[in-house]
Image (tube, rainbow, N blue to C red; front, side, top):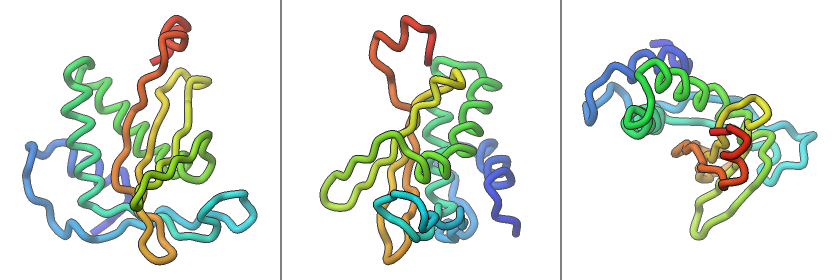
Length: 147
């Protein structure tokens, strides 16, 4: 079984809402946070479970289809999945919420793309991505035509 993000996206995007998936607890490795960066979790491994990916794809699809076409929704979800590692590695904002929620936020307005918030939790020397959200911008950003 190939556990890269593109294959998992293709597998999960077409599933009906709430369907159980094969081996949900398998972790997909997204690499290590480099030791030479000024990061609060320097050297930690970054992972996402198949369960979390299904949740991300399923929920974002459900939310986005209310305002976007299927093609736009597909493109936005692929963008979110493609950028989740970058958001955690080179974030604009970091927020900690007790007891163990760690949020990494990055704005892609320069690329005419949305602001993304990635929720992670710590497990030993690993960060596990639990969820990804599109963050709404303030009205001043909407006037510029950003998402």
